[in-house]
Image (tube, rainbow over all chains, first blue to last red; front, side, top):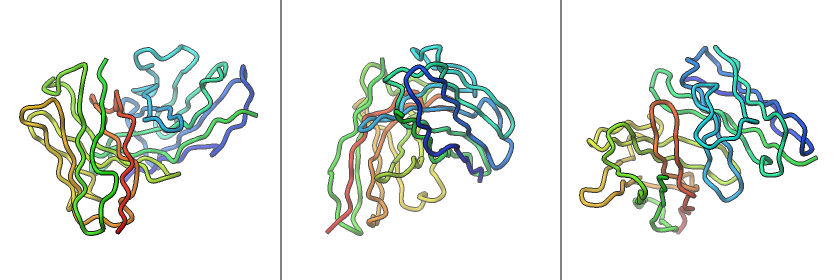
Length: 110
Length: 118
């Protein structure tokens, strides 16, 4: 099965700064199967990006996704107070055709 | 906007069956393009996909849980359900239901904590 690795584990930044989050797959994956989610404490995850680079409905344009093959990036251009959360990448596929998630990157306030 | 809400017992005894329902509002579960998933998240850990069910009844399960999991769509209500048999402490987690389309999960419930303990 494909394993997703996210880095860094924690990113400490100030509001207004740029955040760059990495997601690496153990094998090459199709770009259209890569998604990013945001999760805040006590809430279910929220879809941000699908197909590696398409923003989900209602997602502000400060969120952008890029990448292909095994390396993918989520960028938050200017952090707003509500953006401090945990971010997960997810892919669909592999030999068992299942959804797998990365371990997450926590973006916290510096 | 589609909303999902999980419901079910918060405490299940070891070796028993965990049963949860997900009520869907703001959209019909019979919309053919979507599928309905269950996921879980142990405290302080990452997300694990359990499986999905289509309105037709077709299911796909994570091989790691397949032998213990059953998902179904409600016959008369706008809901779908999850059953996990022979639970142990390792099944203690927040369980989420979600609506999916193609390769992503569009909408999620807020989650419900299920604790396995005697």
